Image 1 (cartoon, one colour):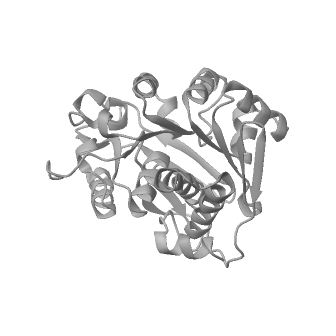
Image 2 (image 1 turned 90 degrees about the horizontal axis):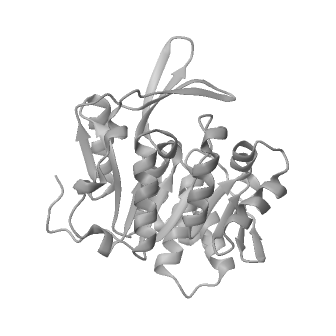
Amino acid sequence: MASNSRPLPRFISIGEALTDMIRVGDNNWVSKVGGATWNVARVVEKFGVPSAFAGAISSDVFGDALWTASKESGLDLRFMQRLDKSPLLAVVHETHPPRYFFVGDDSADLHFDPNTLPNGWQQQAQWAHFGGISLTRQPLAGKLLDLAAELKAAGVKISYDPNFRVLMDERYDTTLRRMSELADVIKVSDEDLAGLFRSDDIAASLATLRSWNSHAVILCTQGAAGASLHVGKRAWHCAPPAMEMVDSVGAGDASMGGLLFSLMQYPARDWPAHLRFAVCAGTGACLAAGASPPTLKLVEDLYLV
């Protein structure tokens, strides 16, 4: 367990940690620890901001792997709850293009209890991040929506990355709008916008998102084309540094983490500088295989390229 003498974290990412079961060949499978909100917590912690992932995981071998990876990442383990429930699995049965489904009826993540988090954590927190499939799965989704509203009212900054998955059909529309209205920062990709709004008109979908919350900062990632940042009526675009990429797994989560780190650590930066740091963080994640958070030094070196 984490030491109770450790200061409470400034950044908390709240949602799901899961296991990706990836089919390799005809009859072989490989497991990888993952989860959108969990990945963002690891990125921000790797950059040097005391961070935690708040969520529930199983007590079996899959939970062991997530717990060990969280400990190795330096996350505050007081925010992770281990329960005698089944694990949440993402079964990726095809990779090109990705085809997947989730297995997690009555799984541990659904039983996360915010009331058992360390005393005083909300007073210490500066940012709380939400997103991923945790906001599609009841009763967890309802708990997280209430918690996001509570934190917002208490003055904690809220970030939100819906991270579109096939579960997010018309039933997700109310949650999408509510979280967008609460968020200080929203991150989406072109693919997210197409899926969430069920439209190929990306510009119109982005305009709708912006209309819901004119005060939110919106980071829109565009793969190899880089990203754009939208603040009020202004927008900036940044192309990524030219690098030999390994894969893009975890790039979006790294971009989100990079932007939040830049906002927390360098509040005097202008918006183009925040955007460039976010793009460089995403690029850094592409230089290693899998969802591997880049080091701060790597991102800072890319920033100066």
